[in-house]
Image (cartoon, rainbow, N blue to C red; front, side, top):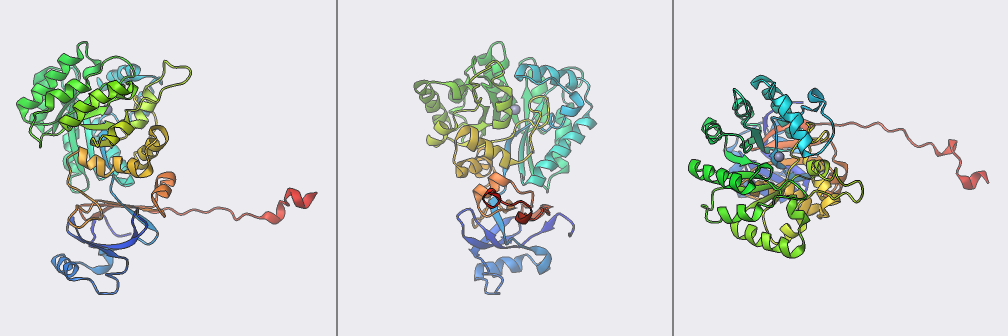
Length: 435
Ligand SMILES: [Zn+2]
């Protein structure tokens, strides 16, 4: 296997989700042409392709990927992760439980973390996601309490800078209601991209929400707020939407979790979605973590803890899904794989396979305000090629046989080989034969 990253200029004989097969010509980080399979193998590339190929001289073999037997998908983007928390489950060994018990276990551990230890876990978690195909990640990072509140922020800025060129990482300052404004502002000055928080956990949720929005306005940045991550209690989404309705169109605003939204009666749900629709707030669901965190108080008929995904999609509201926590006190499991999230959206959220994959790829890129990506001329060359015949095969089996392309470079490749014993029916006569 040649060294990575490696510039790729031609993807050959890939299967698209619509069942067609194609060749995709790349010009740097951009898709230059998408043509029927073998268009370029015959040397009869059309004029646009020739132009692009000349613009990017390369050694043909190294720069071509034969994707026969692989499904070519827009690379996933994860709109809601916590790289500073990820992979801490084993070290913390917390009790299993709900959101409050996870927060208590996390806070005790967080007090002992060094910047270096956060860097190690965050880097490992990001590279796990990249290996699985996710080339863009939005991660929240706790603004901590105590002497050095910005050590998580510094760690994640370092990881973001280290991994530049391999994946896009965007950071959100996650501040509890007890974190002073000055610490959040210092995090933004350090290079954190967005303001975040979790007002539903505050004694006065509306007050904390407005504080965070005013702070974002002062700093001229967008927000991504942990919103109503509970089955009962605070419902702040409508006020959030009203408050940001007149923001400039290019200032990002999104609401993560929105679990409470999924519990509302249809009339109330419709009223809140009117506000969300009018304000262009993106809704981010986190199925694996909320299926774990919610419902502990329900011994029977346990609710699913998801947002109202169907109603959100039917309204045409921007919708995305992420894994949120991975192997930390908020979720002990998780494969860092967007196909796991897509699978849960189908099973627990009743979305179609197309809707579910869109939520973890093109939809997530839209909510994150990233450029369009995938097999469309002019789009960014961000791809996951996975051994599969179609999308249902990809989501169901989630083969580890994958190629991952970021900005026209092959940045990860996994190859799997299986050995399965041949069936030997002669040794096991059927019931019919033994009678
Ligand atoms: Zn979160």
